[in-house]
Image (cartoon, rainbow, N blue to C red; front, side):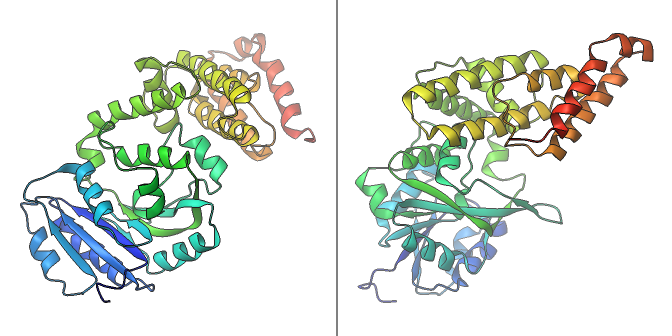
Length: 370
């Protein structure tokens, strides 16, 4: 490829002390079925054998940039964006592996979807065999809704339009350490549509030396800030505790205190009502996202018995067209038997409100849905 002929894709791969997995990552890029790209490898002041591994490749599509010192996860990829000559900018972390048809499928997708400013994909996580398939939302409306609560765009799956990044001056920001990609997707979603291709296009490697593992506490603080910032766009001010509770209940199994369930329900109802007025996100899609989110949250509290079922069943967030009858039945039976274990005798169970709830819930589950 001649330097005078700009490639269609510029691939950015920042590296910092990544010698263990770097060779496999580079090879996964070079073996792509679509070959009209440049691979910009940014060695961010590595002190291990990363430089030697990079320099062992003689492929003319590789552009090697070495920082004299470690500039970090924001300045280094921003240098790559400025250096990129391609119409599209693709990302890969130095410990992940791309499937050979990723670039071809994403170029075809972006060429046929001019409204898209970027697209990602489903992916496999790689730690123990068998690998786990992660299915993220694919429609722009669902992606915009879920990005408020969690990052649903995998970094090593992303391909973006370079013109959109430069036109709107969208670069990585240092305001949200170790989740700078999530914050960038949020800004991109405000100037165009984000998609995920519904098939896995890369392997995401989970290991103890990854940025997320090594910087968990700082990353957690950034997540609180980004959730609070998202709610601010709806005119809702969240406390640090509320941001933490939302994150814990949406993304993990930590901090599962039952009193938080009603607080989170109140926050979700508040943002639902604000969106109905402000139309920040398409109303129907947003309500469906909130309904799915609500069901995922209450599932974690099934051990609290039928109190959890009652909270879910009576909530305005519940939608009958989101959860299958089978899933509802399984959820109810989990709550029902947990309730039975919590009571000391059959007589106590019979005297509780739960016996009536049993029949009422079964009727709801088997009833024909409109």
